[in-house]
Amino acid sequence: MIWPDYYAHLHGIGGLGISTITKLATFWNQRFAGHEAVVLDRRILRLLASGRWVELGHLRHLTYPLAHHHYVDYLATMADIADAGDASVKQLEFFLFALGESF
Image 1 (spheres, rainbow, N blue to C red):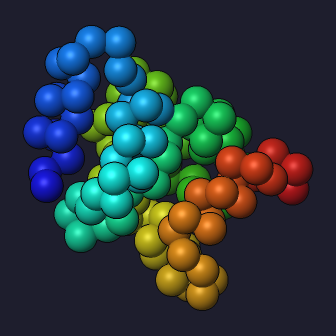
Image 2 (tube, helix red, strand yellow):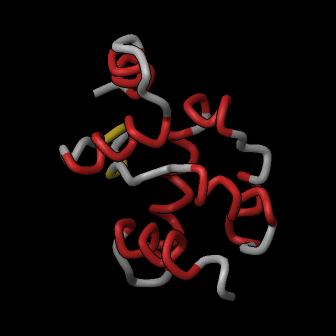
């Protein structure tokens, strides 16, 4: 599946933003550019913007209105970090969501 097409199709329904669309992609086990989908919501975007996690520093520019343009970059970065840490991308996403602001 191609991310821009997937996003455009669901966004076209109306009332669905990047948070909901990435949640649906995650729950439906979608892959984009070879990467497993994970959630990208406002909480994760705030964490990225904070600069708290150096490994994600090149994603600091992501804002909610533009996040859909950079979602595949986010997935690639998450996959690289997960591989380096011997974890799954879903474990990494959960860690960032649940505990990312604690460290």
